[in-house]
Length: 479
Image 1 (cartoon, rainbow, N blue to C red):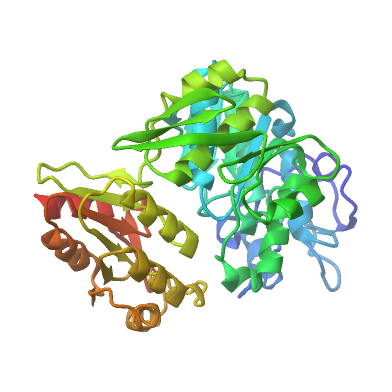
Image 2 (image 1 turned 60 degrees about the vertical axis):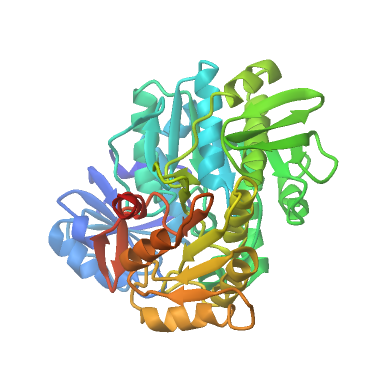
């Protein structure tokens, strides 16, 4: 594709040759090949502008940058823009033929519940006859089946990969795409230029302050989604909903709740051993998945389905068939009369939600194993310690993904939240050992929560990613 097509409607200036044909886009200098457009991004620790010589040496035909001194080498063009992240999003859309314009996009944002809500939306739409795609933390799916596409980030792909994926989903016949939209993705302009048919807000609690610095910044990052959404579905039990709707403006919206008045309010809730029932406007819903927080996720998903033209009757029927997500309140089968559950909860609110949910159906003790990630928000560590101690009968502190931090320092910071409580606890830095110890403590009727990693099948220690699955280790320990 030529430069005029890629940079149409993007304010820019050009230095050097302008007749190049571009074969690929990347912001990773290690992936540059002959004919590549290399994009210079300013990161937290590195500046892509520093890699321009390396990219040119590798064969980059065009450099997209915010600054460039002098003239480029012969045969190379430099495109100068005010903000390379935003320009990258529009250029990627143009490069792949703007596939998102031919898809119905549903974006889900919030601290907790993004993955499950996205899954529920996809399942409801699929059960109602839509050809669906799903993009999120656990990977990519088409019509509920894994789709072979790898991306470099945890939740929302960078713009070049995202638009490439949209093109592949469109080619596969997908009509509706439910995707997680993280606060990082919004702050870093990964979804710049996209229009979402529906934006969904789950909740906002403390997380990611290592990146956003303040809750105000975190809240504003989430709110960007609603300025890009035609229709909003928001949680009226969350105080931050007001900010989401302010950014949404005068466009239509729908509210859901358990506590407060809303368009979709769950009442007459009954918690069962394998799920729950509740009513919305005197209509009974049967949800085959545990947890009060999953009622919220279900309401959000139903709201999104209604906004996309699905009838309430069809949504009600689809909810009864929901299957949930691996690593989200996932039960580990056993014959010992105990509940062992693996969950992704890694924020204060997420940890509180999972422990309270397990309390709803546990007759014995609740034992919680958890840790906190390294190189991430340190302020939440004692908060999570106190929550776990307050709500559990016994706690085991262990490593999550320590990354480049000393895991013992992380554990000592979590421990500060437990020291002034009466809840017994133990510290086992080795996560495998912690899970085995937790299983040994169980008596019939007890529940063991293994929180923090959920579906992840690795631990990041230093800068090395090592295979580790909470579910696999729990199965081994139970055997």
